[in-house]
Image 1 (tube, helix red, strand yellow):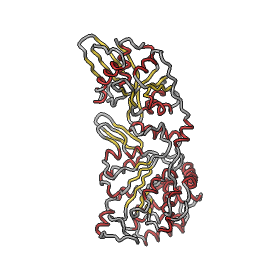
Image 2 (cartoon, helix red, strand yellow):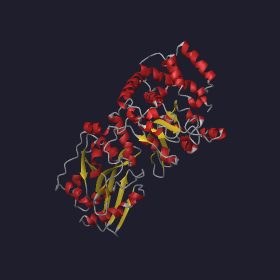
Image 3 (cartoon, one colour):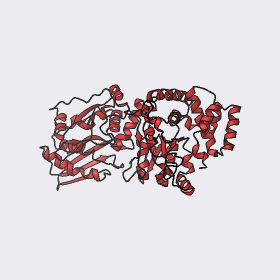
Image 4 (cartoon, helix red, strand yellow):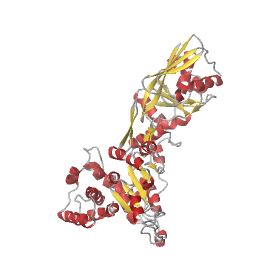
Length: 507
């Protein structure tokens, strides 16, 4: 007997439909799975056998062949347990084949027949909708996540017997329905706010400029000055996510199994990996390719605290994602691309001990140690960081200040500046000032004669590097946008010059 059940598998952040074919033939009892299954898929035969028996059904003592088509793409994970079990029961005559039409299903089985949640349900729901399936059967814990996708009826299933009863028409299970607008409204709130930060007005202004123009930034300051506190609040001043951005971001987290019980990622991601992270952990990869931290931060902020402590090779692999906005992981049989449009925010101490120029603590580092410490950041990486922010130690009177300006007020100004940029670059592949080329600077960031004279004096007197020139103009263009001014004025350039401290120190 032959039966067919439709399921799905994830490739990158998207999913494709998989035909789960089961053939029961006479001969010595044997269970084989073909179609490039990985170890977890091969082990499903033992889980399926135990689940079927413990659910009260007779497992066929025959030669069982399971084919996962298309057979030229490697299948991974435990999500094929439910479709394989249903296909076996259908081939045994327990479930009518007609009831399996226009139904797609996924789920991992426990040995007692209960269903466990799986990764990648959201992209699978998108694939089911795009392939015009009427129903998608998923584990109950994944139902809200899948129901975010409109156009397919999501049926929550908690066990194999429940799935069989539903398919045989013995039990009516209402589809999961969610209010997407309400869900989006509930989950797009931030628990932290810029009003929590005392003092550091210069740093907050610099971060406002960075978020307005999509500029990468690095904060330099002693321990305890508030660098991490500031970084964690950056997502709260970024423009609110659109539903399309939320869906794309949720896909990545769903594939990586990082949903943490949320049906939708509606706030800007903030990822802060430890400096001991590997290359694969940062940009993605592994024996079974999966998204790295840079992709999990897509549409949000990637924060690298104590950036000089990261291995040099790990930092260098960041250059391509920052430039292209995506990560491509190549293997012998396939190549997977994950999106990685992030705002990079880094933090570092001014020296190894952290107390250089700190009036409250004595620095114990030699000039050689300081230079060696700062040289861990390569020129090509610094080329991709537009804004350098000095974050000095807080004074007591600043700690006693009242609440400062909140995130909402700052976000409103950022939104206004970004609207100007969206209109300016509507025919381009990028939407922020940070993406401008040398030709774009002449067109979109015209500078007055007074401004050119100021830049010339600054370049000579502060001995700024050549790479600082275009960065200053880009940042000045953003400052002018925040002010709502078309012309880049000398005062905008003067403020932008303040954000190149590492260049002034000869790095």
